[in-house]
Image 1: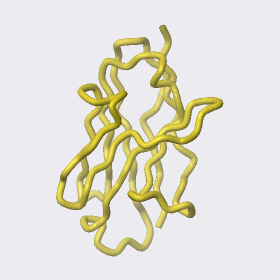
Image 2: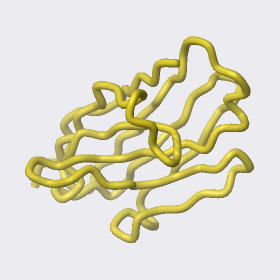
Image 3: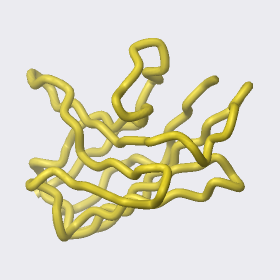
Length: 116
């Protein structure tokens, strides 16, 4: 299984981005997997941003609650992260992984840079 993130970029404060994560390879029942979006800013540890369970239940870090929305399309084996009202503190490399995360499935991530 490979998880590939995309959709990052440079955006001004207050702007929006939509990240995608496609799971490819041999996947047994993607719809049974709990998934998460994580991020790592320079000098910081990687942190959990949002999770979506196999049943659609979602959870968010306090720092993004009300601004970010995680969703999934099981038919496409894809997880999304809609990010609104971005601020410079959201600047980081964003990764998707299973939840709890599995070391061997960390990908390259996608860079999100928010300018003030």
